[in-house]
Length: 121
Image (cartoon, rainbow, N blue to C red):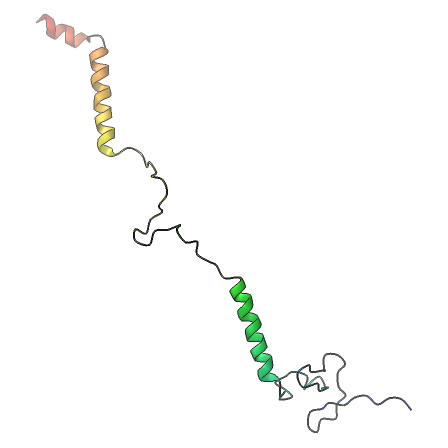
């Protein structure tokens, strides 16, 4: 005689149990396609499964957590404590430098025609 196919262990269900995917690792039952999920066959190990999943996910999240490197930022100043960065000249410095260059050019240039005519009169 041929071996009997295992039947679903859920209450009065007479459907044949699914191989491999119908085996519950928490209650060691064998279930059909309809009852193979933990919630469907009211598994006694459902709470253990949730607890294990939660712990596994928490461990994974903690291993991927970003850590702060202490000392990189100052807590009181909220600025980067690195070397000073020159951001360019101030407007007053630029104006003063332009005036100084104009004076030097004026002093070193030869007299213009208007300067000579003003000097003769």
